[in-house]
Image 1 (cartoon, rainbow, N blue to C red):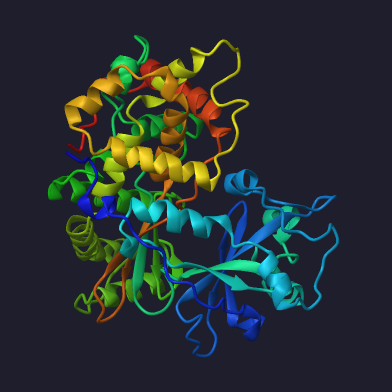
Image 2: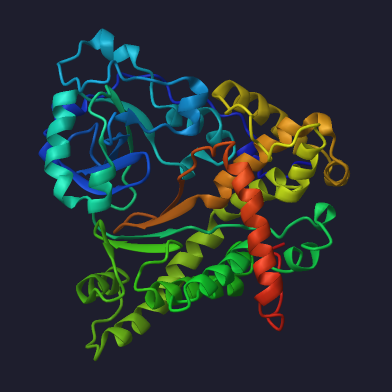
Length: 466
């Protein structure tokens, strides 16, 4: 009996190969700065109609600018030995097609096609394809976007103009209509089997997100404290899901849009709860009757019921949240404490994961094959294995916990465009680094001890979504 939705267990073929589009055939001025993270910067296409780029965003890799300039590597880059810079000097020469082919595609493309698309139905994943770029074109794009970047970002890093390839992805927020990005977080309570006597009473009753929210509130007493609990969002109970959406809405307002668990976009632009113009556009997109609102609070109150109806309908009629929950549950059956116990059976003093190699694509594929076979077992047999894990499977459980971290930290974007059925897409699904394991173990204990010592014991326990 499998523990994953049947749609996720099927073998999925990759997209047939086709010619790689060339972004330099467009003007850098046709790309608008959207956002950036630690390793990438994102631009949306806003130029004249182009079948290769309409409705897409361009994800470019960055480099540190502190001397000497160096690439910013992701875990897969390190595992795959990716080092595409031809030299330490900026190179903006026109490159030949043969040189383009020498640079491999970004590993995140292969990770989606070979790993995550076997776990999440591909219709709920963004398009990820390689695209050609060149130094002189990237340099011009960097110049045009520099003023739109935060000062701290400008001082720390820049577009890596030595790259010959980038990633083209689905633009999930641009164009007409509205979208909401939700970061659901942890969908499971800890398996009590491997918990210590110190942590078991707390971790078996309260979810990781709620405990972490409490810890953050103690560190920032003036910050808004969210009442959102992922256990409600991941439940299949419409009333509980609606409660979770309302809590996210309340936190979005209370934090003036600064929480990272929910963001709202209207016509491609992120809006804040004080943005009257954006809220009025959202009011119109929700097809609510025209009326005069005396205040922004009244406008917000008039939007919430229809907003919640739209979001809840998508969440309850698509398999994405249940897929994420099942993945978390089957990839993290031991809790970080159980994985750490297995690690410590080795005769060394190193913290969990320290000294372990990063995971390359070939090993991820081997792990995936073993994991999918495991999830076909009868639940009682699988539970017995989890209750008494073999030390010989330590590497398997390390990789499983790492991958569970990806699904605990990903986001979903719900897209509502005029006259088109809404969609839901899972994003931010890159694999985590093995160096995170020791940090996670340490943070886990800090969070639990904080809640055990100072948490509200009269608060009802978090209810498992199952």
